Length: 133
Image (cartoon, helix red, strand yellow):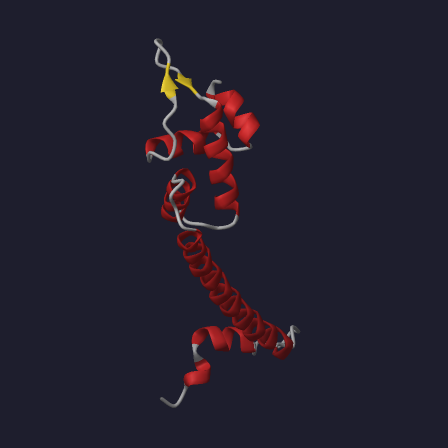
């Protein structure tokens, strides 16, 4: 398969596929004229990587997960540890976003949004709430 075919079948842009090749995640064969020649196994790896990236795994996590996927002697505990660490990072990010949302929602509720110049949103952003330090 050429890069256009594998891009269509994997759902990944050709640019992403070339990047994955550049960093060594996939290694398509090269034909005599230098064109990439992707095998079914390359397509499978690309689909794997696409799904892992869609779940938010980092490139390095993807590299490790792909290595574990290809290692028949792997222990599922290794895979689970990576997934648990990523899940914990997602949970932390959700907590941070929830706190940001609550703060912003409070500021929006506090702002009259009328013709007056006073605005608690701008005051908060300017750090006026910390006056007196």
